[in-house]
Length: 388
Image 1: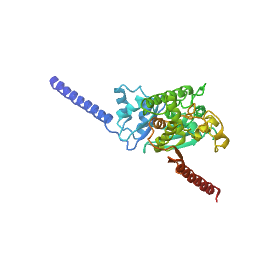
Image 2 (image 1 turned 90 degrees about the vertical axis):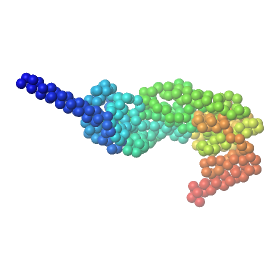
Image 3 (image 1 turned 120 degrees about the vertical axis):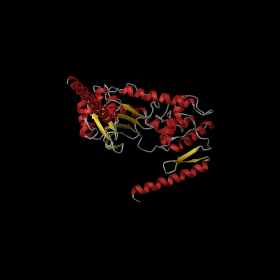
Image 4 (image 1 turned 135 degrees about the vertical axis):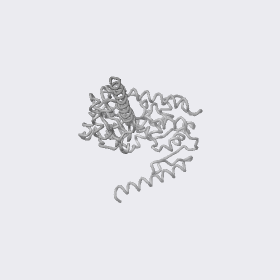
């Protein structure tokens, strides 16, 4: 009898072990297998949140089939106490294991709100946009000029969200003064910039920032980036250029940057200035004259006067020989590369052609015809704008 009872107990224990093993295997398959989410979603992990709260949120939103299995899997992986605050993109079909890894790995948020502070040549703007997880595209929620517009409530609210990311984006051709003034308008940054950085020394680009970052440190990142760019481009420059130092490369690149916004013609514009320098001709470029008037502190906002074209400033290339003493803006990488590798052309003149680009010429007679054509285009536009 006791032998029979013992035999049945062993049998029951084996069956129980098989059942437990089956449950474990089933739970593991649920944890590692593809999840039920049919469309991407954002999951926000607030500061101080718990794995229980996040697991319940995920179950309620249909991202996981069981919050309990989600938590047990996180415990087994020793990640239950490693939640990182932020906003994260969960792709369709993500497994529980993948979601646990996402919300515990940390790093930059991959979903939610992004605030971009754009420092442009003509204005500073704040763009608030949110990632649509279904399209994986950002959608603009607000866009305003902090200097003149009322701050939208949505900006104030979203700026304080845990997953919000912040960037400052510099347009090519902005001056150092414009950059510093733009950084002053960024209410997430702190501190001051004691001295205006040398013109041309800051790299136009997009920079990730965090609330509380020091403005001076952000400027230093921009300076270091431009220093690396100039060094690399200078190292790979064409031989025989009429520029002798990296600083002269930077000056020439800044003029190219201000002369054309058409990427395809930067190297052509560079060829005109190189040809003029090689021939001992004055550069005669309006943006340098404008810089002599404004010294980079704002936009002129009107046409140049004849008196200004004749005025003897260090930057007036109608008067001085060769390059001006400093850059006239902060050039982007493409303009640096154009200055270091201009096309080989016979051109020594160019003028606007009415399309946003320029008409190039080898002779003065051809250039005068291009100028006359541009004057006709200007007159037609003036007549149209006046209603005649």
